[in-house]
Each structure stands twice: as structure tokens, then as C-alpha cells.
Length: 218
Image (cartoon, rainbow, N blue to C red):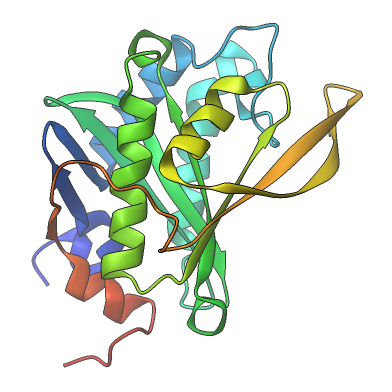
């Protein structure tokens, strides 16, 4: 073994499409992403996430952020895994795009989630990043459907999902900052998927596929 990605192939995944690059969240990227998120991901009066991770006290934020990413590594297994990829636009770190799944070899589905730093929102990156991720999941990881969700008052996220081809798939009630909020569940299939303009270039996918049980080890 010559690299940490040999131990956890998720760290060696790299997907490039045009000016966008999605890559495994190594420790150096954890630090950069924590600094970016600490500068703001959404307006303080709003909460777009079902798990309110941005409500962490400033003094605890960096540690909590790092612990989440390290925990997803420690708990990674073929039966339950999270693939978080740092998003870089023209070489600058701008956010994270991830997918979470359980029993994937049977279900062939997972839920996407993402965030961008405030300075990088409203520029079309959210749609482009989701298109890259979904193309990667369908074309290289054998997903047969992809789910997502957004609160009914999160128009920006719902608009991105609609542009990519997700359709509404029911609603769920959630507690959000002590009040009830309605989460719109979303579903994307390969036939409905609206792809971006750039072909994908991928690295590290063979080792990652083996790590989740898709292919037998050589």
C-alpha cells in the first residue's frame, strides 16, 4: 500500500466535467471545507437541512465538521456507506456533494445531498454539480434510481432538483428548530435524468466499486 486511498478507496475517487471536479474528502480538504462552511452556507434565519449541522456553536464548528467526515470513513462498509465528494470549481473549493445508501447491492438507490458556500450560490453551480454526481452514480456505480429531499420553503433546492429531472415523490413532516416543516421527497430515474453538457472523466472508480461489493477483488 502506498496511499491512504488504498485503505479507503472513497478518498481516491475523482470526477471531472468541464470546470468542475468532485474528489474524495481527504484531510486537507476537510480543513478547507470547514473554513468555507464556517463563513456561511445559508442565511442564519433559515435552515435547509434536516440535520441542522450548521447550528453548531462557532467554537465547536470545525471539530464537529471534521468528526462528521471522519465518522463516515470509520463506519464505511458495503452494507451502509456515505460517499462525500469535495466540489472544486476551476480549482477552488466551493462545497460538497454526497450520497448516502444502505443495502445498496439490493436496493441500488441512495439519497443525494449537497451544500455550497454562500459566495458560490446563485451561479448555476448547484445544478451542474448535481448533474455531474447523478451521471457518476448512474453510469459508473450502477444506481437505478436516486432520491433527494428539500423543505417546501427551499425554492432554490427544489428548482435545482427539477432542472436535473427529479420528480416529487410524497411529503414528510419534520421538526425544524422546534416547529413543523414539510419535506418534499424527490425521485430521479435514468430516463428522466437531464444531463449536463460535459462528459465525465473518472479516476479511482474501479477500487471504489470493489470496496462496496460491486466487483470482485482482482
